Length: 335
Image (cartoon, rainbow, N blue to C red):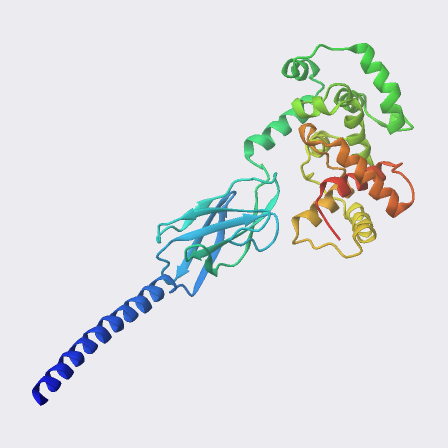
């Protein structure tokens, strides 16, 4: 009887020892797995030119990385409302190329270690300018400005597939050009023709679609920002950039300071220049950047006029007023 009890106890002891050893091994394996998955202590992200980014890692991420970017600061995974991501399962992945998904402009980017359904350690945040500033795009604008400056109207009309309308040119000179400058003799004949040709025809598909009124408004915006009409090819380049919603090359701090004061009135706060939407609002108000023709939304502009009126107790009247309305409508800045 004593032997049977001893044998049973011995068997139970062996079984308990085996089960304990198995559980211990599982626990150790689980701990080792978690450690392997979560061994990243830091990630350093940097821009390597235009749309390209690269990162270094201190540690090891067995499930790879999520690259997240957005026009809103500090994008995350799982995604925020306006965020996008790329997933790379390769633990050795160290570079990526970003693309626009919320229009051109400055995006914020981060990289994180992927833990399966969520992120662990995040990298530092960087800003990546996804505005199409490729040499070809800028070169095209500069070429259009050169044609305009040298009054090579036939070349412009050939590209636009338009015929010359001398009668319309004369009408626009009376309707728009004379309202832009009280003394037309102050303009060289070449620049006078260049401005009138831009208003009458545009220089590319987008400015063609904008229409005469909007093209004239671009000239008014340039004049309001720089206190002059275009004087040379570089000025005309900035006019075309503004018409296409691009930042001009030249800046006027006085115009931007005025815009900052308007911003504070509209949004009851100072602009955050690290926020691309605030920065866009300032640039639109200062220089009159236009929406591309296909992106204009007249219903949104009607709402923007109502907001303008509620703030300033009047409807937009001057060029600067209309630029403020455009910023309210399209910049995305909020109180």
